[in-house]
Image (cartoon, rainbow, N blue to C red; front, side, top):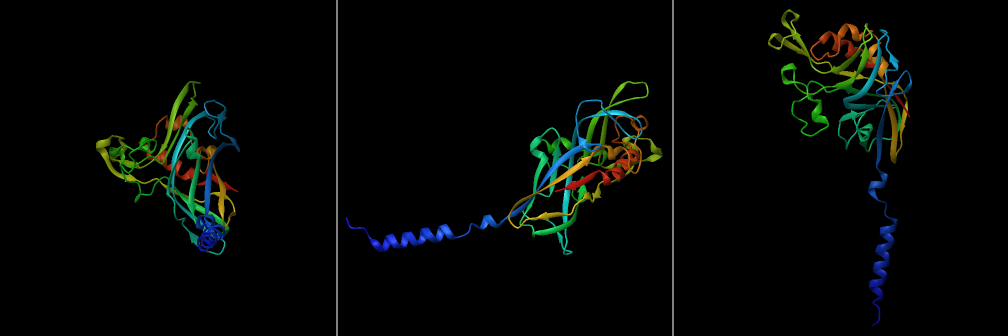
Length: 263
């Protein structure tokens, strides 16, 4: 059988076009954020009573879980970028390695960026009860009677009290409550306080490449939760603060300088 040369030529031409045509996905870029946790500029070591905070409390950390949201990038040309093609609420958990990396966005304008900001926790508008139905995020639920929605932060561990006794602490941030006569009783709640806050991490600038994935490390400096601008004393506030707005206020203020970025 003689080959049909016209068909062969056509197939060869199509093959050449396919080989030379650029894959549209190849021009995509992205930003990956890698989460790091440190104490006094050293990587966090969990489950060991080897740290001391500014109040003089010996303490250890067992686990940290938190949400960040509303990531915003500030380009050196003055433009403000909110990445597309992303999930703009991210859950981080020191017990789940895959949560320590976040592909925060794609198709981001390339170039130099001066800084970024994000919401620590969830804003009042976004902190909706029951929006997560699966673990691990669903485990961050904040009791409905205390304001609903979700924890912004669970920082759990142990401290040594003034008698040298090992005590558990749950340094948790979420919606605070206002109580009539400061009773602390649920029936006496007269209002709620939304303790989320905006973080502008120290560090930068950073660069987003036109193609490929650019990486940025976001570090939580754990000691900052307990020392700036207010000294936090576990002996004063005890092991659980979900119903102590004054303690959560300190946490919401101290957390504003608890992060840095580095590329």
